[in-house]
Image (cartoon, rainbow, N blue to C red; front, top):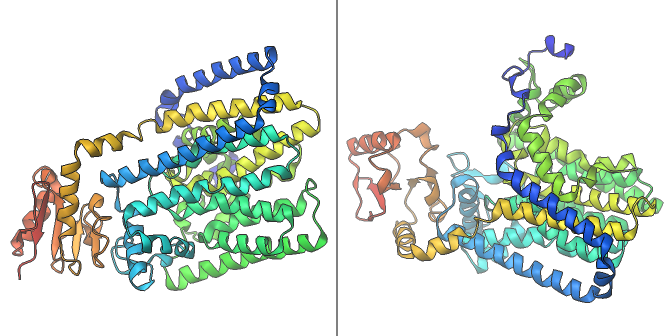
Length: 537
């Protein structure tokens, strides 16, 4: 703490280090956690008193069929859920509005141009280098709907089941354990909740991390190179996932790798990601919006800037770094990441296994952007995959060193399934609300969509955020809360807001008044649900 006396960090003193349970999910999760503990105790009793493990072992094929069937059913259910989230206009400009406009432009001329992201004509790649999106474009060309993008995210995220199934035999675990592990992954809450705010490029991380791990263990040259390149193309900060995996494999002794494979790992998963990250940051700085260094401003002293200064302060002020990590919301985030995995990522006999937790610290715990340590947002896909791999390594070590017998390994995985399932239900049980809500108000939602789609596609539009995905075909489209500093813009053809908010929102009352002073009139495109101002001819 003494080092903090001489520091003047850009933060709100030290007051936020106190743990305030009201800022966490403690009160909504305490009863599900208690239930999970009680059910786990019942499972332990059953495994001790009854031949549960033997029964499951005897019916492995039936267990696998059940796991596979339920996994497919769950993924299809999520596809239906996200479909109706879009149908009920439970969407926003950030990020699905941005990406839907971007995909519509890519569908037209292959360019990732959007006006929503920074309130001007701009390539999304000027903000994040994410060419991985082009893998989704063929599907969007076939089905050019916003719903397509969210369904693709679900399918991409849970496609990680495929490399996971291929990878599991590489661990010294029983076939029954491997089968149950697939169910465990499907129910791992963060894999579902990370997609709760619609499409994001991070959805590719989970599957690609599993593929890279599998190809390295299998010593497949082309697979290593291909999965590494795809992982780097997700986003400029994806290099940290590649480096953590590369460093782990260069230092670990668990998997036997040839010298040739280790050289490939050094070049492809250490040197290449560093060079690529530097190149991507150069492109963003020279031609784009720059890197997201502002999310690490907490670790900059007055007058400092840049990643190098952040790194310097992280190394020279470890006490401050630790104090920022151990805050209520971050601790709650860690609980939701680790509890479903029975805290096994923390239980490692080999220190190099902890290298796989590097992205968790760098991407999720260090930044001051609150969404990065919230499992309801997309920033946890990659860290979740690595924590799951750490769980498998921990289970294997516990069994190899005879700390736990196979029966207890199966019990541990079963407990993980139960805890994951209970927490997942608590976090997502209201997600299916939109299905019934849409059918109850179908005419209303269809009218809104019809009204918005009737506007001439070549016109410029400023609209409230739920409407931007539907208006994605407009190349000049802006969010009313961010456009022109919330001031009038005489170049806009249409102003689109909810009719019910026209006279109740201070912002809308003032904006409507100012636009009307410029000669704007209520448009014939208006409806009972939507108020539209049209520019005078």
